[in-house]
Length: 137
Image (cartoon, rainbow, N blue to C red; front, side, top):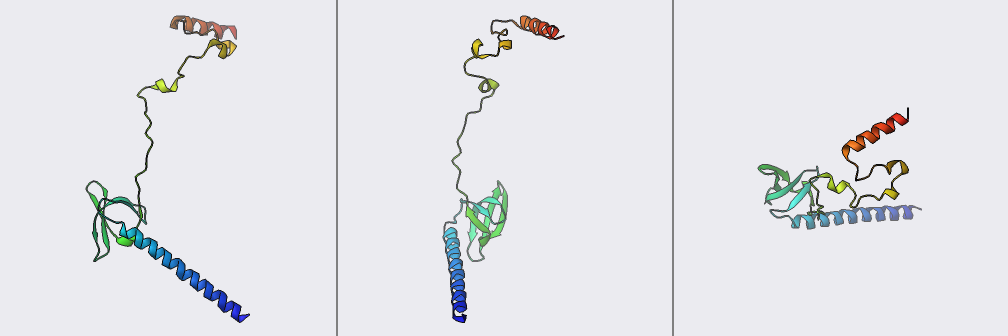
C-alpha cells in the first residue's frame, strides 16, 4: 500500500515538473520572437508595440499610443498580437441599403396596404390616411 502511495506521489511530481518545463519552453519561444515593431499584449491587458528591448535588465519599452511609452518587465509580455484580417464592408452614407432592392409587388402587401401605391401623390396619401381614420370612428 505504501509503495503505491509513493509511486503515485512520484508520478504527480513528474507531471508537475513536466508541465513547468513545457511552460518555460513556450515562454522562451515567445520571447525569441520579440523584436522592435511587434504588437504585443501584457499579462495585465495593455496592448502596445515593442520599441526597444533591454536584455541586461529584462525590460521592454512599449509604445501604447503615439508618444505614450511604458517600460515593463520582459516576462509581463505574454502574447504576440497578430493583426486580424478584418472583413471590410462598405457602409453606405445614406439609408439606401436599408430599403429593398425592388419595390414590393401590390399582391405581396396586406389587403389594407394595397391602396397606397407608388402612383399616389403626397396629398392623396394624406387624404387617404385621414379618411381611413374617420372610418374607424
